[in-house]
Length: 214
Image: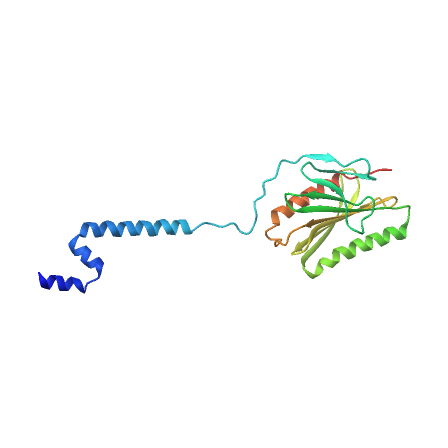
Protein backbone atom coordinates (compact mmCIF):
# COMPACT_ATOMS: atom_id res chain seq x y z
CA UNK A 1 0.00 0.00 0.00
CA UNK A 2 2.86 2.36 0.77
CA UNK A 3 4.39 1.81 -2.65
CA UNK A 4 1.10 2.59 -4.36
CA UNK A 5 0.78 5.83 -2.40
CA UNK A 6 4.24 6.95 -3.41
CA UNK A 7 3.56 6.15 -7.05
CA UNK A 8 0.42 8.28 -7.04
CA UNK A 9 2.32 11.16 -5.48
CA UNK A 10 4.38 11.61 -8.64
CA UNK A 11 1.49 11.07 -11.07
CA UNK A 12 -0.65 13.91 -12.51
CA UNK A 13 -3.83 14.53 -10.58
CA UNK A 14 -6.06 13.45 -13.48
CA UNK A 15 -4.24 10.10 -13.70
CA UNK A 16 -4.90 9.50 -10.02
CA UNK A 17 -8.56 10.35 -10.48
CA UNK A 18 -8.77 8.05 -13.51
CA UNK A 19 -7.29 5.11 -11.57
CA UNK A 20 -9.48 5.62 -8.51
CA UNK A 21 -12.73 6.83 -10.18
CA UNK A 22 -12.76 6.12 -13.96
CA UNK A 23 -16.48 6.90 -14.27
CA UNK A 24 -16.11 10.30 -12.62
CA UNK A 25 -13.09 11.05 -14.80
CA UNK A 26 -15.02 10.18 -17.97
CA UNK A 27 -17.91 12.43 -17.00
CA UNK A 28 -15.50 15.27 -16.28
CA UNK A 29 -13.88 14.96 -19.71
CA UNK A 30 -17.28 14.99 -21.42
CA UNK A 31 -18.28 18.09 -19.45
CA UNK A 32 -15.09 19.95 -20.45
CA UNK A 33 -15.60 19.03 -24.12
CA UNK A 34 -19.18 20.34 -24.04
CA UNK A 35 -18.06 23.61 -22.42
CA UNK A 36 -15.33 24.07 -25.04
CA UNK A 37 -17.75 23.35 -27.89
CA UNK A 38 -20.33 25.80 -26.51
CA UNK A 39 -17.73 28.53 -26.10
CA UNK A 40 -16.53 28.05 -29.70
CA UNK A 41 -20.08 28.33 -30.98
CA UNK A 42 -20.64 31.54 -29.01
CA UNK A 43 -17.38 33.07 -30.22
CA UNK A 44 -18.24 32.66 -33.90
CA UNK A 45 -20.79 35.16 -35.13
CA UNK A 46 -21.07 36.10 -38.80
CA UNK A 47 -20.55 39.84 -39.18
CA UNK A 48 -22.08 42.13 -41.78
CA UNK A 49 -19.86 43.24 -44.63
CA UNK A 50 -19.60 46.86 -43.50
CA UNK A 51 -23.13 47.98 -44.38
CA UNK A 52 -25.51 49.37 -41.79
CA UNK A 53 -29.10 48.21 -41.81
CA UNK A 54 -31.58 51.03 -42.34
CA UNK A 55 -35.14 50.80 -41.15
CA UNK A 56 -37.02 53.61 -42.86
CA UNK A 57 -40.72 54.38 -43.14
CA UNK A 58 -42.63 53.88 -46.36
CA UNK A 59 -42.21 56.63 -48.93
CA UNK A 60 -44.57 59.51 -48.22
CA UNK A 61 -44.14 62.98 -49.69
CA UNK A 62 -45.49 66.48 -49.23
CA UNK A 63 -45.15 69.67 -51.27
CA UNK A 64 -42.75 72.47 -50.42
CA UNK A 65 -44.29 75.80 -49.30
CA UNK A 66 -45.72 78.31 -51.78
CA UNK A 67 -43.32 81.01 -50.60
CA UNK A 68 -40.53 79.69 -52.82
CA UNK A 69 -40.10 80.51 -56.54
CA UNK A 70 -39.91 76.76 -57.17
CA UNK A 71 -41.80 73.78 -55.80
CA UNK A 72 -41.00 70.13 -55.24
CA UNK A 73 -42.02 67.14 -53.15
CA UNK A 74 -39.94 66.00 -50.20
CA UNK A 75 -40.16 63.18 -47.67
CA UNK A 76 -42.73 63.39 -44.87
CA UNK A 77 -40.09 62.44 -42.31
CA UNK A 78 -37.58 65.07 -43.52
CA UNK A 79 -37.40 68.65 -42.27
CA UNK A 80 -37.37 71.62 -44.63
CA UNK A 81 -35.51 74.70 -43.38
CA UNK A 82 -33.85 77.78 -44.77
CA UNK A 83 -30.10 77.64 -45.23
CA UNK A 84 -28.58 79.35 -42.18
CA UNK A 85 -25.00 79.68 -43.44
CA UNK A 86 -23.45 83.15 -43.66
CA UNK A 87 -23.45 83.10 -47.47
CA UNK A 88 -27.04 81.89 -47.84
CA UNK A 89 -29.45 83.83 -49.99
CA UNK A 90 -33.20 84.25 -49.70
CA UNK A 91 -34.41 81.08 -51.39
CA UNK A 92 -31.65 78.70 -50.38
CA UNK A 93 -33.06 75.67 -48.55
CA UNK A 94 -32.05 72.46 -46.83
CA UNK A 95 -34.02 69.23 -46.81
CA UNK A 96 -32.72 67.64 -43.62
CA UNK A 97 -33.01 63.93 -42.72
CA UNK A 98 -32.30 63.73 -38.95
CA UNK A 99 -32.36 59.92 -38.82
CA UNK A 100 -29.59 59.71 -41.44
CA UNK A 101 -27.74 62.88 -40.44
CA UNK A 102 -27.95 63.90 -44.08
CA UNK A 103 -29.34 66.83 -46.05
CA UNK A 104 -30.00 68.03 -49.58
CA UNK A 105 -28.67 71.58 -49.91
CA UNK A 106 -30.54 73.68 -52.47
CA UNK A 107 -29.11 76.94 -53.84
CA UNK A 108 -31.36 79.00 -56.09
CA UNK A 109 -30.68 81.94 -58.38
CA UNK A 110 -33.15 84.11 -60.23
CA UNK A 111 -32.22 84.73 -63.87
CA UNK A 112 -33.39 87.60 -66.04
CA UNK A 113 -32.45 86.35 -69.48
CA UNK A 114 -28.83 86.85 -68.47
CA UNK A 115 -26.69 84.48 -70.49
CA UNK A 116 -23.49 85.58 -68.76
CA UNK A 117 -24.95 84.89 -65.30
CA UNK A 118 -26.21 81.47 -66.37
CA UNK A 119 -22.80 80.59 -67.80
CA UNK A 120 -21.15 81.72 -64.56
CA UNK A 121 -23.52 79.61 -62.45
CA UNK A 122 -22.94 76.53 -64.60
CA UNK A 123 -19.17 77.02 -64.37
CA UNK A 124 -19.40 77.38 -60.57
CA UNK A 125 -21.44 74.18 -60.33
CA UNK A 126 -18.86 72.35 -62.44
CA UNK A 127 -15.99 73.64 -60.28
CA UNK A 128 -17.73 72.62 -57.05
CA UNK A 129 -18.17 69.09 -58.39
CA UNK A 130 -14.58 68.96 -59.66
CA UNK A 131 -13.23 69.80 -56.20
CA UNK A 132 -14.08 66.24 -55.16
CA UNK A 133 -11.65 64.76 -57.69
CA UNK A 134 -8.87 64.64 -55.09
CA UNK A 135 -10.71 62.02 -53.00
CA UNK A 136 -13.18 60.70 -55.56
CA UNK A 137 -12.67 57.34 -57.23
CA UNK A 138 -15.05 58.35 -60.00
CA UNK A 139 -17.44 61.07 -61.18
CA UNK A 140 -20.26 60.13 -63.53
CA UNK A 141 -22.29 62.91 -65.13
CA UNK A 142 -25.55 62.25 -66.92
CA UNK A 143 -28.23 64.44 -68.46
CA UNK A 144 -31.78 63.32 -67.74
CA UNK A 145 -35.26 64.60 -68.51
CA UNK A 146 -37.97 64.76 -65.85
CA UNK A 147 -41.58 63.62 -66.39
CA UNK A 148 -42.59 67.28 -66.91
CA UNK A 149 -39.94 67.75 -69.61
CA UNK A 150 -37.28 69.59 -67.59
CA UNK A 151 -33.58 68.84 -68.02
CA UNK A 152 -31.32 67.98 -65.11
CA UNK A 153 -27.56 67.46 -65.10
CA UNK A 154 -26.69 64.88 -62.44
CA UNK A 155 -23.25 64.05 -61.02
CA UNK A 156 -22.73 60.84 -59.04
CA UNK A 157 -19.46 60.85 -57.11
CA UNK A 158 -17.92 57.69 -55.67
CA UNK A 159 -15.22 57.44 -53.02
CA UNK A 160 -14.81 58.98 -49.57
CA UNK A 161 -16.17 62.39 -50.52
CA UNK A 162 -18.45 64.71 -48.49
CA UNK A 163 -21.05 64.97 -51.28
CA UNK A 164 -21.98 61.88 -53.29
CA UNK A 165 -24.82 63.23 -55.44
CA UNK A 166 -25.28 66.65 -57.06
CA UNK A 167 -27.49 68.18 -59.74
CA UNK A 168 -28.30 71.40 -61.58
CA UNK A 169 -31.54 72.45 -63.27
CA UNK A 170 -32.50 75.58 -65.19
CA UNK A 171 -35.00 76.87 -67.70
CA UNK A 172 -32.21 79.11 -69.10
CA UNK A 173 -34.43 82.20 -68.72
CA UNK A 174 -35.64 82.80 -65.16
CA UNK A 175 -34.59 80.00 -62.84
CA UNK A 176 -31.45 78.13 -61.82
CA UNK A 177 -31.09 75.64 -58.96
CA UNK A 178 -28.28 73.47 -57.73
CA UNK A 179 -28.64 70.61 -55.25
CA UNK A 180 -26.06 68.59 -53.33
CA UNK A 181 -26.36 65.71 -50.85
CA UNK A 182 -24.19 65.96 -47.74
CA UNK A 183 -23.77 63.69 -44.71
CA UNK A 184 -22.94 65.12 -41.28
CA UNK A 185 -20.71 62.20 -40.26
CA UNK A 186 -17.11 61.02 -40.59
CA UNK A 187 -18.11 57.40 -41.24
CA UNK A 188 -16.56 55.87 -44.34
CA UNK A 189 -18.82 55.90 -47.39
CA UNK A 190 -18.59 52.10 -47.64
CA UNK A 191 -20.53 51.92 -44.39
CA UNK A 192 -22.91 54.64 -45.55
CA UNK A 193 -23.72 52.85 -48.81
CA UNK A 194 -27.39 52.05 -47.99
CA UNK A 195 -27.98 55.59 -46.74
CA UNK A 196 -26.31 57.08 -49.82
CA UNK A 197 -28.50 55.01 -52.13
CA UNK A 198 -31.58 56.08 -50.19
CA UNK A 199 -30.61 59.76 -50.44
CA UNK A 200 -30.03 59.40 -54.19
CA UNK A 201 -33.58 58.09 -54.61
CA UNK A 202 -34.96 60.88 -52.43
CA UNK A 203 -33.10 63.50 -54.44
CA UNK A 204 -34.28 61.99 -57.71
CA UNK A 205 -37.87 62.30 -56.46
CA UNK A 206 -37.18 65.97 -55.71
CA UNK A 207 -35.77 66.44 -59.22
CA UNK A 208 -38.66 64.66 -60.93
CA UNK A 209 -41.28 66.72 -59.07
CA UNK A 210 -39.58 70.12 -59.32
CA UNK A 211 -41.64 72.89 -60.93
CA UNK A 212 -40.84 76.55 -61.58
CA UNK A 213 -43.13 79.36 -60.51
CA UNK A 214 -43.61 82.54 -62.47
